Length: 174
Image (spheres, rainbow, N blue to C red):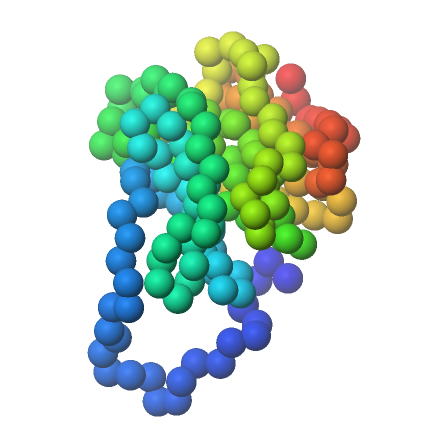
């Protein structure tokens, strides 16, 4: 309902005074929050010039699948402290993972296998325009669409893609 309320889990009563670490995994650079769905944890990270989308086992943090793609990224000087890692959090809906990278690369993956269903890359459509600190908005899944903001300060658009095929359904802006 987009109200910050999660359903399906019950917190222990009383809450423990202290939590114990069960596992710890080094995933790479970035600001993507982990998303837990069932027995999986999904998130994005950057290692070198590659962005990764990870499907981890929630019980031990091991890789269930890893999707990697090359995406060189030139940072705005003012953003150096933020790093080159993805800032968006993946969106998981109906067995699919939608990942929007720092440069605006959008990938739809099968949540179970990590196989690419479809992907969209800017391919220079918006020229040198990108947000000063990189793409940070997460994709929105609504009805039959996945909606993303791509481009940046000089040129950009809000684009809705068909969730199943990746075909552009509509856009607002350039």
